[in-house]
Length: 140
Image (cartoon, rainbow, N blue to C red; front, side, top):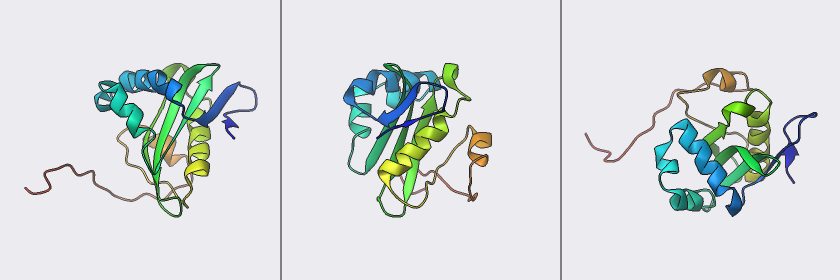
């Protein structure tokens, strides 16, 4: 069952459904995430791939946020993407999506890489680790 993002607002955070795809793609386009925005059908497959949990925040029927987590269901979970519409930020939606995605995906922690929203992630209970994002080819 999904969670509400705050006591006084009507935001529902629920499991992603295929009908949410256009809303998720619009959020990706707004963030400049071309690899998700330019190929909606591919993105749709990614959001429901094995080991993936995707949740959305809906304001009525409108998708205003989504979180995409990969997990082994036991220990490790990785936050691959999270976005909230600029019109709906600072309402607890991202926190509610993280909570619900973790609840659905399982694991003891969520790891992530970021080059944005550092203050948001630092406000959560965390440990900071250095990391790398590597791309093929894996030889120099």
